[in-house]
Image (cartoon, rainbow, N blue to C red; front, side):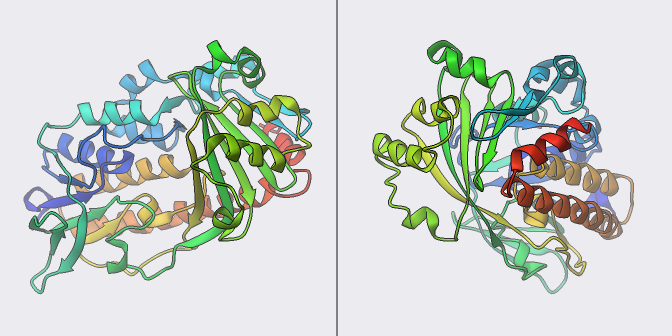
Length: 380
């Protein structure tokens, strides 16, 4: 059976799943996306993304959406400042570099809207949380959902993230705690309400690195500054640090104590934050994560190569996976061969990027981290 005749299911309506569906539809295929969220507006989609020319933008070009992306992305969002806890600047993006196409920013919400609008209206089945994917004797898989819906597909593609329900069909590799925990804060209307912070922050991102901790903040297109307080800490630190995340003012005071000797400019990222406080652990899959090819199922994105965000590669690789797999299917009459070719190519670039990400993470939480990251940035 060739690609045009196969029934294809994509699990997950994130950037990877949507990009893949768009590419397949352009080639005349009719994939079905199953998404556990009940609508595009159910959940806040997160912060801003920088899409690289060789990965995320390459995928958008394959999807026929690069021009639309460039009309709405934020080139000024490429600005980056690196400081230590005293606020000493070790690197800062030169203004003339903010107009190139290297890694412009786009809010996750805007990227998702762009991709959703490019798809046929009946592509996504909202409110379908996968329960089981069951291999069938004659090939293909039966998908069973928590709402009672079932269906059978020749090829299922998991784009369902870190704790994929499909991954166990291919791999028993454990998702492991990375050693880094993060507490997310939000500063609304930063430019209008906190001009001192806005002036210090700039138009893009700011990383303050010291004492095996980090304050990482990014300006989003809606004027919100998202703040990520990062800690090299044990697996249960988030639960055992005596911070009540449901009591924001008390929680912020305790967070300020953790940054007691940091500069006032940096403490403002905590003091000016609103009531939303979101603790989370960062996880990853093994750097060399691979699996034996099996007919009728494969993985993209975090389901395939979960890694921490310290190389800015997650969404970019997810979208690159979508492009590589989608184009391989469209250009190959044998779908199984197309999937295998994609996997072999993906294993190579994902391993290289995962190793780089791990190296960056160690540097971020090492002695003299700001100096080291600043030197890396200034070398380009």
